Amino acid sequence: MSSGNMNLTLKIWRQKNVSTAGKMVSYQVTDISPDMSFLEMLDVLNEQLIQKNEEPIAFDHDCREGICGMCSLYINGRPHGPGSGITTCQLHMRSFKDGDTIIIEPWRAKAFPVIKDLVVDRSAFDRIIAKGGFISVNTGSAQDANNLPIPKHDADEAFNSAACIGCGACVAACVNSSAMLFVSAKVSQLSLLPQGQPERKQRALDMVHQMDVEGFGSCSNTGACEAECPKGISIENIARLNREYLIASLTEKEPKKGSGDN
Image 1 (cartoon, rainbow, N blue to C red):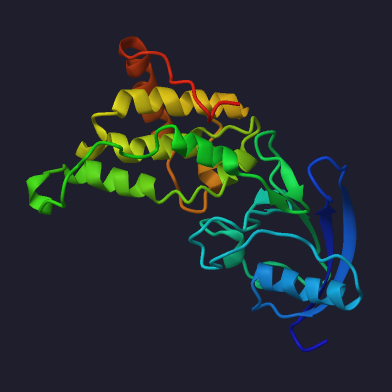
Image 2 (tube, helix red, strand yellow; image 1 turned 90 degrees about the horizontal axis):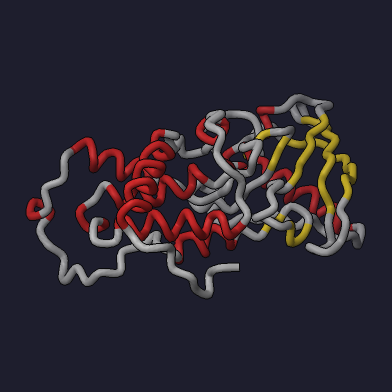
C-alpha cells in the first residue's frame, strides 16, 4: 500500500430489482487514495468486480460536480455521508481512516422504491413538479429586469429556494420520510416572484396533494432535513408552504385530479 493510502471494508446494499429482497454484502478495497472522491472509490470497486466476472454495483451519478443531485447515497447513517453542504460526489475519502468500515445504502422511503442496489426511483418528485412547479401563463417576450421591481429580500429568498437540486436527502434524513422541504422550496421559489402569482394558490394545493398521493410522510419539524440538505435549503420554506396552503385551502377549489395521481 502506498504511503497514506487506505484499506477499507465496504458493506453495501445489494438488491436485484424492486420485487427482490436485498441484503448487505461486504467488500474489501485496498490502496485507496484519500484524494479520491467517494464515487471514484466505488468505480475502483466495480472495476475489480468486473474483472472477477461479478455484477458491478449500480449507483446513480451524472455531473459529479454537486449540481444534479443524482449521487444520492446513505453513508454511515447520513445522507451523502459525513460533512455538510456537499453531495456524495463531493465527498472525498480523506473523510475516512485506514481500516474503516463504511456502510452504504440507498435512500429508505416508501415513495423512493429501490430499482437496483443503490439506485432508487425518485420519479415521485417529478410528478410533484408536474402538478404545479412551473409557470404556465404566457409571459410574452423577455422584459427589461427593471420593469418588474422585486424587493431584494424576496429575490434573495426565491434564489435560495431555487438552489434545491431535488436529491431527496431531506426525505432520507426525515424520520417520517417527509418531502416538505423539497415541496416548500419549489412552492416558495415561485410564490415570491411576480411571475408565479396567477397560479400561486392552486399550485400550493396541487403540489401538496400530489406529495400526499405519493406516500411521503408528514413533517414533524425536527430540522434534520435542513441539516442534511447539501444546498442548505431553510426550513423557513416549510412555514411559508404551510401559510400558502392554509390561505389557498380557504379560497381555492379542490386539487386537480389527473394522470399524476396514483
